[in-house]
Image (tube, rainbow, N blue to C red; front, side):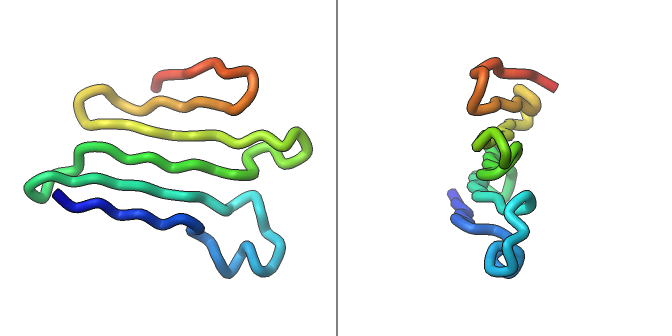
Length: 75
C-alpha cells in the first residue's frame, strides 16, 4: 500500500494570493493500482467561504461534495 498526501498543493500560488487553485490531495494505491483519490479545494467559492471535495474510486466513480448545501453529486 502506498499513500500520497499533499496538504497544500499550489504552494507558490498560495504565497502569491491565488487561492482559487489551492488544493489538498490524498491518494491510495494497493499493489501499484489506484484505489481511492481525494482532492479538496479549500477556496472553491471564496466569497461564500465554500470548499469543495472531489473523491473517487475505480469501482464507484467520482463524487463531488460542496461544503454548502451538503448535497453530494455523482459523475
